[in-house]
Length: 177
Image (cartoon, rainbow, N blue to C red; front, side, top):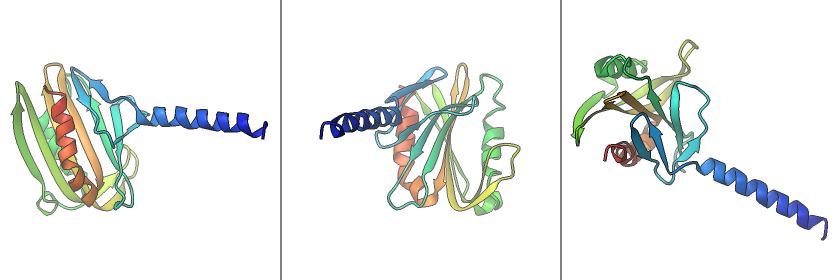
């Protein structure tokens, strides 16, 4: 029993460190905005310099998790319309078949363009061959800031994305108050 106690202590410490790291920060800054992460969404360590923050969204009903990514490129971001068009082109089906929607909102002094679409999403890194994901959806937000736009994109199974829409919009708007 004496030998078992230190091993259990080590395992407990390892579990605690892993749990704390996975939890990540409750709030995080991207450009001039500080966003609040929904409590059930997991923090993911960013592996690319293009990504300023990344979260994982899970649901017991979804076969795979959703991914939320925050991008910031400074003032040279290419504009809202060009980015909305690029997001919609990430689906195999044409724009008229993916239920593509765009909505503009002004919160305080900040303009936000929300987008949504669903169909066969072409997942993958730029320059690599895409992996088609049937039954996927995209929720996006382009937050136009003084330092440049922040791009927020959630992709995942359509039912998961639909269920996450309220938390997604609340998170985006938390950074604008």
